[in-house]
Image (cartoon, rainbow, N blue to C red; front, top):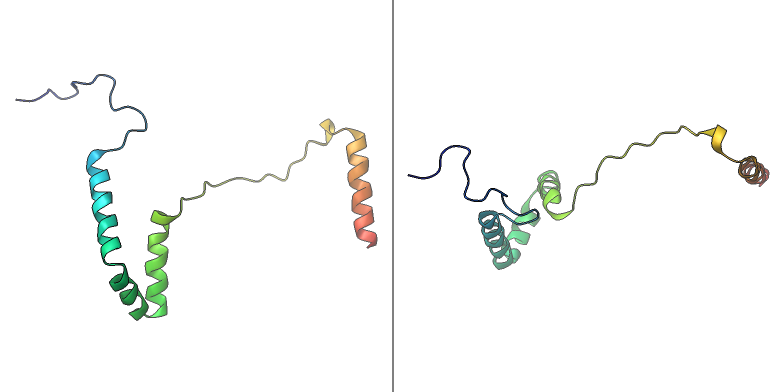
Length: 100
């Protein structure tokens, strides 16, 4: 009859980093479809008006290029912990750049 809800034959679960077999098969089939029809797809893309061509390409981007993680930049400087020599160097460099 199968397993009860919450019961598994593998108490450790799927190993970390292992790929889902179904997803891998589908990915391979999609890749094969694109490989076998690349010229036709290219021709169809060229027939699109610029707005739709750009939309099509931007829709594909997440699948081609990994997304960058958002980073936060803070402009806070802990002046109390910077040695005076370094501050002097920075000030000298800045004043020289302003003279040029």
